[in-house]
Image (cartoon, rainbow, N blue to C red):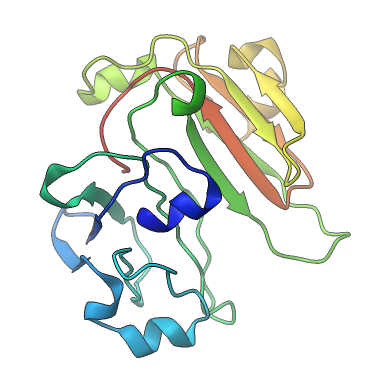
Length: 211
């Protein structure tokens, strides 16, 4: 999503996004520039068609595995973009188990925001672990990793439901028990229980593009 973000008051939205989907080997398996160019009828049938013709979308059935979505401005244009993933077949015996993002992170309005909407009835509980990695990315060859990230989780109304600076400051035993504790003490992690919508914020810059 790019140009359609303007209607939500997003400043400097990406004017013409392009979308690429890669498998775990790095092979390109799907791409789209303008969503109506291909799969128009199928995408409209989901009820999730983008509101602007210049937005991009891919509808695809995937085998279990790891995948990377790459959002980029056409002709290397820059701006604020939104990458979304929807499970349009909830009856299938599959579910997302991990979602990570790699993008430029600044300050003020240029924070990185990641969100999830969890299904289920109002009484159901879904426990999730949210991590903000910075220094440990250096071992993966990431240049200028974020030295000291902070993390806040908010509900659908924007209310803060969890904050974290260094992951060992709170919930150390619970986070370690997941087997997903971060490798650096200055990184952030938070376990949260009943979540329906969740947003994370980090500051500064640790990379390029969603990953």
